[in-house]
Image 1 (cartoon, helix red, strand yellow):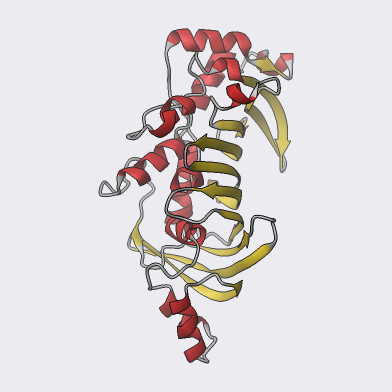
Image 2 (image 1 turned 90 degrees about the vertical axis):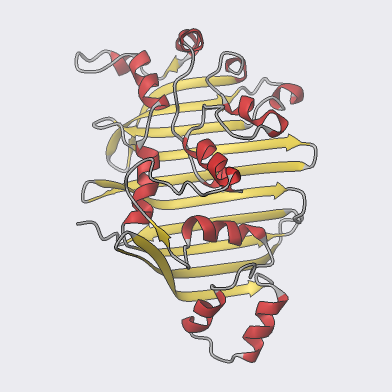
Length: 326
């Protein structure tokens, strides 16, 4: 789950692979790189692969106080909703320490474990203080999905924050470190683990993977801002066997033409290997607050079935507003 929740910054790869990639990239507009002050396709791909603005945007998410509103829905195998959890509150930051406090919580279905449900039945107080007590418990959810989102977006116990890239917690386990590598460095195979050939399948710019994808550069206007677009999408003509060679099914990114900041990113994963079954889509919408790029909305929809957990289907939407940026 960690591997899927955080997104993308492309890194460099071999000169031979890049030369081949430049030959197969499609351009929506022939004029896109014709302006005297513009740059080449090769320059563009360099910026795409070495982007850090997406990662920086998520650092800003944790570093600056803001208001959040989230909705999580859990579905059964027939796609009927069986549980939901709605929350809103404030993300606080003081002295490089961040934490969240829910101001509103509502749920239906069996979101929480039986132990937590018994605690709620005994306590008639429905104020946010009850949920504040519940949030201190580990393993409080019946499902793993809300637990994973708590670790990414809702640090009830607090955590150290910084806007400096490379200042992350070195004590994190290899699953979390690999998640960040996959999330913010799609296009790299530099993961610590390689289960089922995952690391190779992530290297979408590698020459051996280029035959599975269509790469396209174009132009669009995103909420009033002119942007370059970059997409990498699996070819529709692929056989089932060939699709099995890919993990990333789609990546779409919008880059602000003025500064190359990422303003939109969508990606789709699909993975089948032995006992692991994943299908996930994530879309992140960015905006500017006092000249700083911050996530404004994050959408997730996915199914996953991994050992030791029951299969889960979920949809998650997170709205982020009222950033306090000096």
